[in-house]
Length: 369
Image (cartoon, rainbow, N blue to C red; front, side, top):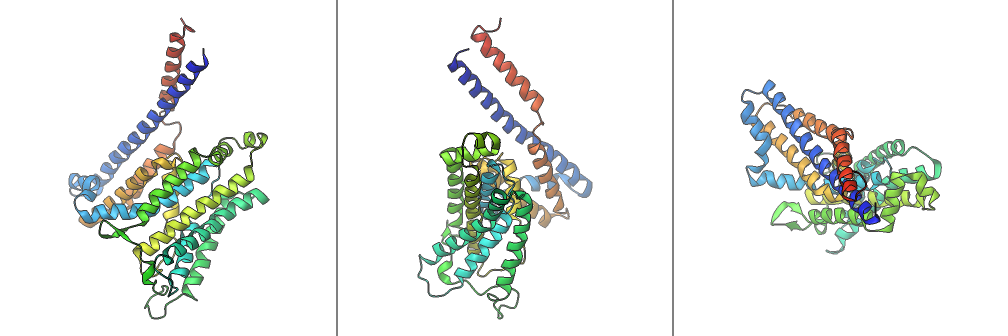
């Protein structure tokens, strides 16, 4: 079999794998909707109406469509951040702490008066990126220098970021005149520009898309990304090849933290007049789920983020128009993630198709009669 034929066979196998990935996702969604209908039918007086609301409820008015886009913005940052560290083989779930820490750091800059318009927002973004890089970079550094299990370090760092951030907000930055536990008001110069004349859709959407593009470019268009993916696929091979494994893990952790921190910054500045979070926002945990949906490929992140935002907006619409508990949406999400994450789901069929295709290639080349 010639080298060209081998290349074509490998490319065809990759296409088959991609097709089955799409089919696996579609079937996961279909099965989850079937389960959703069964659950709705058990608790609803009008299951057909409520199921239709679940499917197309967010499309019925502009406000809900705006909600979908608004919910999607922070997910682009945290989802891409998790894709990056996962691609490098690191179970670094500190995106939650990086998101929260980025919001706190941005608040520390945003409440400072007198900074010129056009300079204040970039400074807030830089502060958020730096805080996120520290929070998400520390587990990577601890893993490389002291062989600490990344997921354990990330869990601990999350809580350090949470309680340190809350101390800062509720003590030196607390506004006693607010009437509740919150920071001082942000300066007017930190208000993010809105898009399409809608106050809920801001420039953070553009920054989120750029974050996805940057993450995809880094992973698949640079030597650093190739090294990171090699480390993720086979760390021993990367070591024996002389690749800078430690620097790569630390570098991609820092970059991912920057993205998550910027996500916290734009979400806070774009939707609030002061810091009001009393705990984790769960955007980082959502990023873990989205990375699974995308198979750690940032290029699919916009679709995955829109899907998650859509079904959550559906949950809100269903909760508003019926007595169905929103936990049903959590069940639907869990089923989708479990089926997509199950690598053996449809694996037998996929293997048979690849083998059949390979035999056809050999027959064409005269290798098999």
